[in-house]
Length: 422
Image (tube, rainbow, N blue to C red):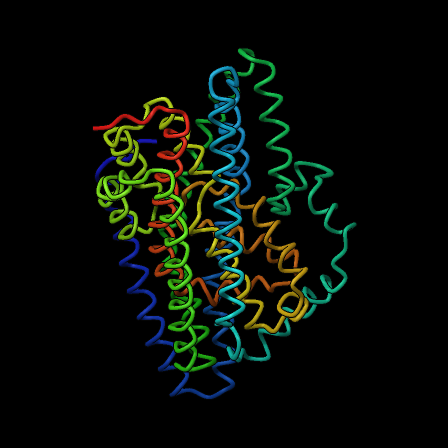
């Protein structure tokens, strides 16, 4: 997964373009809001929002092959159970615990801070959401099982049912591993497919500024600048959540690594800074491998645990998913979600599964929010609300993903008695 230095600077340029697009969108939307008639605004807003729709549809287009290829390859690499079964078990215990803690903390904090309450959306937006909300009032075990178990993998891909795709990919990956050498060519082909799809992700992400411009202009044109106050509160609430998560992760890290923890933090300071500035945890993968080996982690454990962590252990993204989905639910007043703890816990568990194929791709969390949110009647157009400020949240969550994966790798090395002292 090596990245050239020119590629490393590219996401930060993209971040800059997104911020510029956001500012231009705010100004354009404000001018239209202030200087044109309500009729013009009603006509203009849906048309400019098409830019965001195009971007989102392109992202949705690539998510199914990405989930399938990354998960199957991950499982196939995990599959040499003679040498790595034990290490894999330990890593998964850490990943699952950390994921649950991240999701739960996000859910608790978003219920306390309620950043989405009071985001008064235009009636036009609510109209589109009504039929979706109607579908999920009767959220039942039968419906849940139908959502989990695929009837056809082609149907799951066509309808972007991420969870069904995860189930199929797990079966496929395990079967592929079981047939041994005969499956090698398929693993290699899927590995190549992953690289192709990640390249496509790069192309699609270049259109992110246009999507942000469309989403921002549309929202501000309808609502004026008052909507931005909500964003400031939303970003603040999310970063508060990350601070709490960091405290928990570092606390556990200290219990395991003791005095080595500050040494680890010094080692990963540079990868974390790059991840923050580029809003991509994937961009620092090669650098992180290098630093973890310098810290004293066993090479075999690093090369096994880190790639796995990039698919299974994205702590920052996990917290963001509960935040973004609850924010949209609160904004659209989806009482089936906001007023029922049971539904929220069900959603948390679904995120636990659906998020397992997203790799470290920038803004992929939004797609999982989109796919999973639909199950619970969270309107898909609500993503337009968070897309606009997603970059700011992405910076924090990418940095947190790097911290979480570094701690996981160090912890597994320590448990295996394979942590050298330098």
